Length: 399
Image (tube, rainbow, N blue to C red; front, top):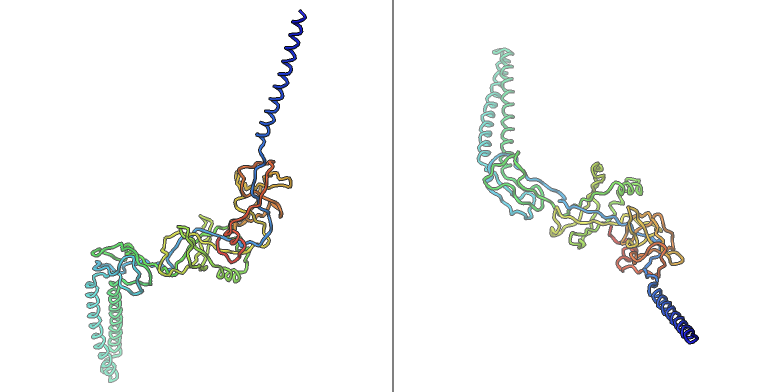
């Protein structure tokens, strides 16, 4: 019995030791697992909010149009007998484009000249009759009533001559309209009528000519931007001078920058009530006719310089349900999401109107790795060289 009790005590002590060892092993494994689960704070790139003078760039989508666009129409009715230009070519003012069969109009002119000759002959006879009638009246051979009859007849023949002369001029004009010439220098389009077609004033446009050097770029400016511009420049004369002093860049559809600068040309008299925008026209030199009407591009210009503006990189801004937010790193290197009110964009930077103070740090890269209250490891963000140049140089042109 005693031996059995001692054996049981030994077994109990062994189990206690084993249990203790098991607890130590489990505790060590858990501490290792805990150490593996708690990674270091994520690293983010931050930018410090500092005031600086920033060129404010505006941009807009532009449609290119001919500086002058002329629709070519027939002024008289007749059959086309020739097309005298190469479609899509450059023509000069006065170059022959189409010719209408001139024979009916030449006949009308000849007839009008004949009628004029008859009227002139009648006037010559009537003038002679008036002279004789006056002499007879003075000699008391005819009455004053007969004299007046001759004078009135002479006046009537004079009116007939004037009408005949007008008919001749009209016939000459109509004959001239049979030669359809270019009214401006420019590029002429594809013809919509062919030789043998009957054309006239009610027919469709025969072709179109566009003067493309310079060429116009049409931009629709929103009402808000227009109102802000008027507020910044309330004096009409100063506003006009400011607009004339602006230069514009044109970026083409393939992303390339057009090598020539544009100038302000005109703005419309009213805003479009349907779109709430106003039409503005710019002109660009177009040597070699590189640009054509109908092309699209993006125009850009520096419209002003914002003094001591707070700016942050565009990458630092996120949108959530229509609100713009930035991730701010506080003094304990923890994240706080903050709504901001933004102004103009400029060279990859965004002006902050409300929500941030000078010296605060915002996350530029690593936004997907953070959430409010999370500690982070910060590292200063370095902007690209071209972005630095565009935000520091007021002479840059990129809206």
